[in-house]
Figure 1 (cartoon, one colour):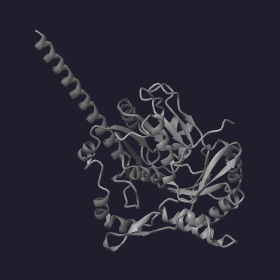
Figure 2 (tube, rainbow, N blue to C red):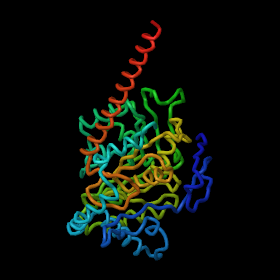
Figure 3 (spheres, rainbow, N blue to C red):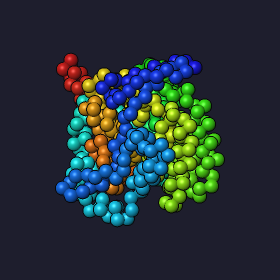
Figure 4 (tube, rainbow, N blue to C red):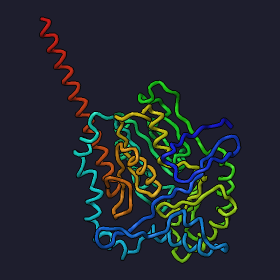
Length: 389
């Protein structure tokens, strides 16, 4: 395998060491995502779950505390009706901190003035609705047409936890950049792109040496969880997703135990959690935030001060990208959620239908801007011609 270099800025590391794996380097870190939260009195927030770091470390050797922690975290991602009511009651205070991107559209446009907008979009829950069967998470024709128009005016990437090929089959737009497996499988447009500036086509897989291990885990988990009704395992190439959306809560402990029994055999893999899904992936320091930075660099915007990245996503794993944008001080993140959540995003949208409205507004604004520029150039040429006469 060809050695691949992953450039990770030192400022983004928490506690990290470089470890040789096969013939390439992998960055290991104890960095974690922020846990979800619910609002409490005074406009503050209370954590609903312990972090992934605490899920995987400093627990008793028999694993009982670990399983309980996993189940607690699974419950946290599935709030009860009472918790949802509490969240709804405090919606207004959360909205003050994370206002609707639709309501703030004019302010967003002003902030991007004179800068190159680059669009990053999650798939599930952002471009398509969340459904019980992950294989049926289809985006609408209207959303596809909107994203196609978006890509005409801005470099556009889909960044998903799904396998890259699977996301491409859902979206079916060859002019986009695709980052699957939480950014561990990145490929540029298959039909060429006007944004590449003559550079070679993008194809980057920083976790290639983990493929045999991921295949083993997938096969083992298929057998382990087949007795748990509603549980499904999805092979996303560089990660394995265990979906529990259709699993009864009294079976979550059993499911967590089965996942743990497999994961403990693979110390180079780690557990993370999304919306109703447990995900097993390599311990390299690579996530959606790193994928965003890599794509910006591929587009020639790595050190540009006039770039304006916009990332829209709905899941915990999108927080890595939101955080990168805050640290860069460029662009902003938009969280897609109907309920208040602890987030690094600056703005919010409630559901995919609002995402589509926002993208359409962005397209219309860009079209009007280009028309205005064209008109001004034409008027300037007419003035020059008149002066010569």
